[in-house]
Length: 234
Image (cartoon, rainbow, N blue to C red):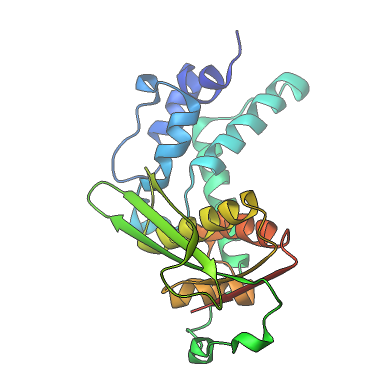
């Protein structure tokens, strides 16, 4: 039976494709437990320098395996493993080059808006993230209180741990996303979110998303639109 695990990882053709992918260590997909697990783990795989791609190429390879499968079934056009890898890498390079560059951090972002400019019943949320490079694990946390309330008067706090986190700034981005989700769950409508990751706040405010953070920052943009007021500052 055709399953995601078989199509993308376990069939002989797919195994030949993955062996050609230019990662630091050869990927033997025959030893994989599930496609979902490999997709999650792929965020910490490192591309070899000559490839010139910094983003995760696992989804691109998977996509071109899927395209080759459809071409074979519907058009009777077979593909070679090497051609799949080549096309996937070329497309990933094109997509990466097309992303807008991130400007250097703007020190004006350090200016904190005065509280009178904030809507009534705005809540302040401080976030932070920690990342362990040796295991690519992260811990994130957040604290929420009313803006004009004393610092020790919290209305909510939380934390989570994550596996397969690619960088420290990714941990900070995950902290912001989880904090916004928590704020929505306790029916907060106006929020002022503060992070000590200046480059991350710059990316959120300018909507110029680094390729490795594109997915998480897209989530942050979507979630923040659910608030009547949502402000980010460094």
